[in-house]
Image (cartoon, rainbow, N blue to C red; front, side, top):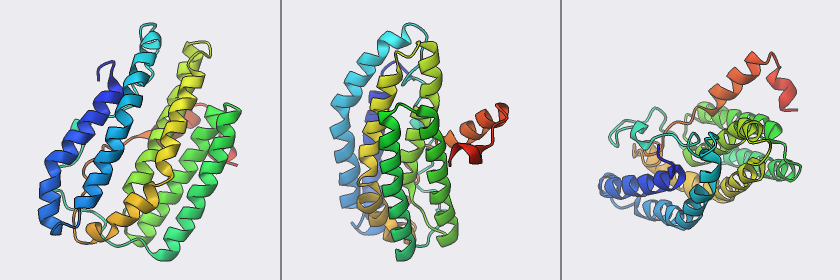
Length: 238
């Protein structure tokens, strides 16, 4: 991906949502239209922030620190819009309540860790939160794609940020923390405004969001790093 990795990622997401909107609308008899609008609305809001973030990142990239450049997965890796969903049940109300409590707790803890600049602990906490999401997805045979995607992005920013900070003698640390805080804003509304709203669409086999976002291998990278370091992951999430 180019040095405008963040901005390119946003524009790619907008283009994909626009191209697929009519297909999803036809499949859902118009029920997906508002969700498509929300997704693009949030993307458009991010354009100025992503652009100036990319500009700011260039001074580090010129010195071989690939902040942002290595933090986004190419959108060409997304599924076909016609791919059938592996899970098609609706998230149960009690599990939504449980996950929402977990989300609020996660946000509070990460905000505290951001203040004391603990990227390693943010990575570990994020890995734990993603496991909670995946456990509910398996239990209810449902999908919670946007909240999981944002958490994986936070995981990527924090995990990669540790190495960027090492390479830059700590100069990238505040920028990594800013990017994490930016993604935390998405988690304020993702569960209720996007994932919960999409449940009936998933039940009807409409693959909006699920087929439109790339898989982020954060948990795989996280676990590999801690295994190589011979550190127990359970020790890191307590």
